[in-house]
Image (cartoon, rainbow, N blue to C red; front, side, top):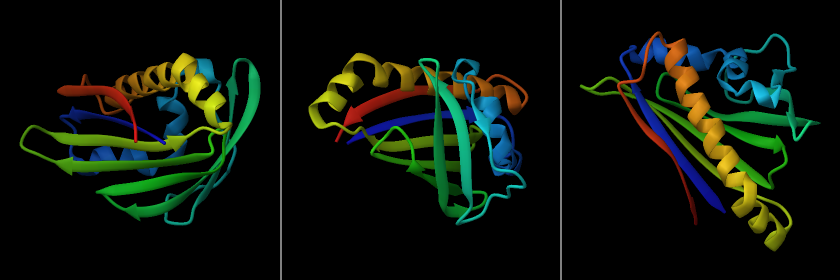
Length: 161
């Protein structure tokens, strides 16, 4: 199992920041274009139990991803868990907190790959670097959606647990 963690601090209010994430269609806006990411589910509203279907491309191959919102506590946190993905496990906790510095947007992704030792090799060769790039892009895109550069960024760090 691996854990990816990162955060950014924005000048936007807690409510305005959470509102960006409360619109599930914004996920396509904060995902790198090279993934060709599309939300397939229509008429979505963020809530506990919401199921969201996605389509993306990896190495040019179309792949489907399905998540369920397993926790939803606006404007503080929500959790999405993969029900169908290239990962054997994926849980993404999004946290939001107001501080004197600004609104802190935190990401903690717990994940694992299938195929045992082959999955671990793939992680070392490509997956960890790709996830870091995706989350670095995501941090820049979130800041842009919130109207300006972040006040502070803690770049994505991945560790094995």
